[in-house]
Length: 314
Image (cartoon, rainbow, N blue to C red; front, top):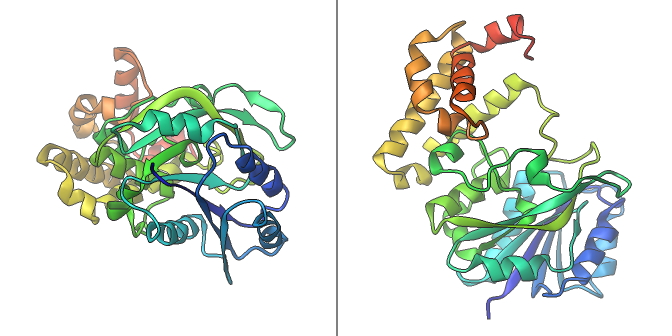
């Protein structure tokens, strides 16, 4: 039977951390061990973890200084890796969510021959009140994305709703510094190695409270998102993942980087329109319908400075 490890990163999480840890205690399929990395908290997060170590199989590693969300999870995954075989399973945990009791059980049963499986979530606010029944519907997230779509920086998998095989860490670690969020990188690795699948059931209560390290899609400016996507694409091209792409995928990624760089340099890019139309399914995977795709392709031929000045983008 595969071992299951939960990887948890904490940072000044004392407000919601006990409720999160209580939900781990309530799992119908308990984890075999939990690697918790505290990222230099100034509050009582470490003390809370130490108290729960009497009830949960916690391995606590407290970092002296804050290193950031991606680096903390990368450290935790490195620590977990040494204790797992390739077919063992890893679940990522955020400090402020609430896991539904059958989360691990449902995802373990569904992963089958894939490298990663993810579920849905209900969305709660800072007080635990449900604000949406489905995170996937709220964010209009497709259930599956092609490798090309993932190469653009678009992602549909939220790490705290996922379970994946430890063998993925062979290609996922170390997580490159240019990767915005760890679960985006793990999803791409899964798509390249064994594929990924989904279940429709909610597996957690996903808390959006204004202080999330990630997760609030509306909190970043449009131009900032574009820069992040360009950084992501360049990071992929510089990584070992690039060598594993087929030639068509490499050509697409190179074309996407060239297009994004041009969008920051030029006011209008009419010459890019044919490429944008051909690749609209990958660049705008959340868009449905021919007319909608054409409209998005047309706007994609507008430079960033022009769009911020004349279209109210920021």
